[in-house]
Length: 177
Image 1: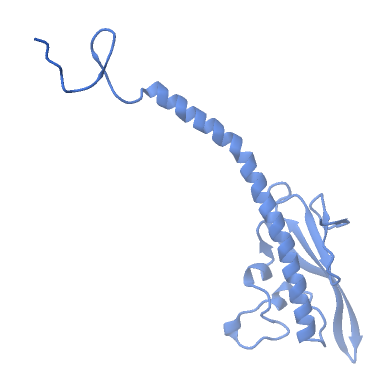
Image 2 (image 1 turned 120 degrees about the horizontal axis):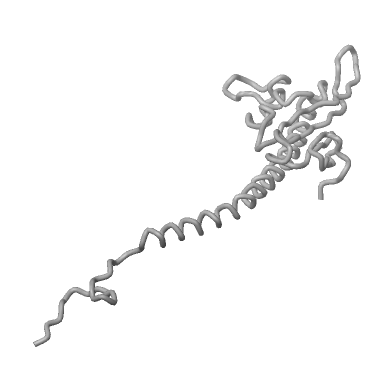
């Protein structure tokens, strides 16, 4: 009489049971393949981050331009402002003023956002009745680390045209498409 065992197992050639699961060698091969795939993906992740920083820099320059236009219409005697801090300010600190207009969010008024450094400079002014009125400005965004956080620098002025410098500086000559 031949009895069948109720336990199912795969048997080796020599008749002994083969353990279920993976061997150490098989697991190491799978881990090696996963590591190779991850190493191939890392450069792609870096370029995606730079692309996101680029988009953020261009949108931030547009936000600064809009804030400058609003500042100029709110404080016509002052014209534009030459500092990011004047466009910001804490609403809980009281009413808006020419030194804290509360137009722009704090992350941008700090001058650092998404791997870029933002500044307002090259301000032109006229003096009317003893009061300086700023009539022009340039806003710039340059990468904190060229090649790592971004590749190009971006510039604009009171006229609203955004240009870029492919070397990451402020010599912006090419139009942003």
